[in-house]
Image (cartoon, rainbow, N blue to C red):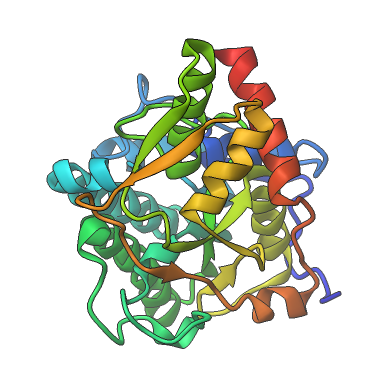
Length: 313
């Protein structure tokens, strides 16, 4: 395992977006690190307002920042709310990263997304493939904002010597996900629909697209473990992929969720609806070489996510 180069113990650590799935998972993972965790809700701080962010950071003086806040969603949300996905995410990233430099934050980790890679390119996706081709149209607004976040971290490192890093997790699911059939991530939306089909006694569920696109999914707690690990063990301008190492078709994901939910119906697919990128599978060899690997299988993660869904909904 690579030597730990940044100590979290004893430091003031701001988890930006602590109420979301990614941020709440990072919060749980940090509990054993001996750091002082800082949080602030959107009711008290609008991350899209630069003056508010600068004032809050100057007053609270975080020494490390996990930037997990974002406006997120699936294909439908990206397609119907492009201005929100572009503006909100650009504003959040710009304000937090710039204020981190101004207030002397020792280290910042920016949570990117694997959707920033070109739509059609070689697989698995390696870090040097960024900006080598056109983006997937169904999520380009979100992707452009996330690319800007990665480039901001690189730019502040080059110009000011800031220890700001970027990591790209695979598609997330898990504890604290947002269960919204129209605007949620694919795993959460499928789980909600399949659970509803079970309750209503339906024998078929129709899903968007062909069911053939291949995706890499990561359990939220594995993502948090990887983020904390890389904060402690990595410092570099290059963004790092952080994947699970396994890929599944959308049909296979739906079938796995059906097993967990206990629904034995069948799936139909509406090919008139968009599929998104045909394949998204990352090469995470560089993160793995540092000593981090995910530990949770798809089925185990889905079982935990379903238990969380049942408890909260």
